[in-house]
Length: 75
Ligand SMILES: [Zn+2]
Image 1: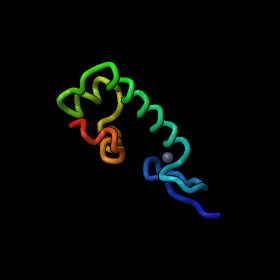
Image 2: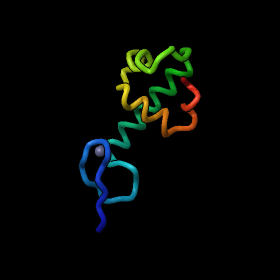
Image 3: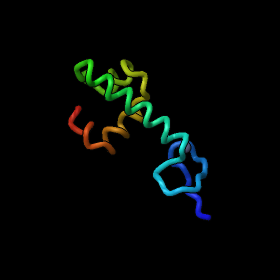
Image 4: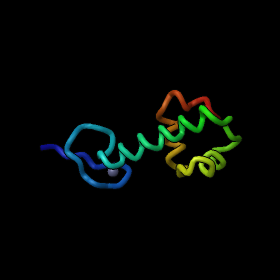
């Protein structure tokens, strides 16, 4: 069996995907939160502010913005 190392938490997982199931779940929850926020509020000036308002860590927000086309024009 082939194992992949999760870039987020460093644990190993046995299916093909970018990260382990735990981190993928966390990401999905956060992305939903972010989408919800964007539906209800206008985009703040900085990622810092968005992080404070959504409770999503800045490094994760930056990752979503880089990886996800629908967030790429936010800032
Ligand atoms: Zn992980």
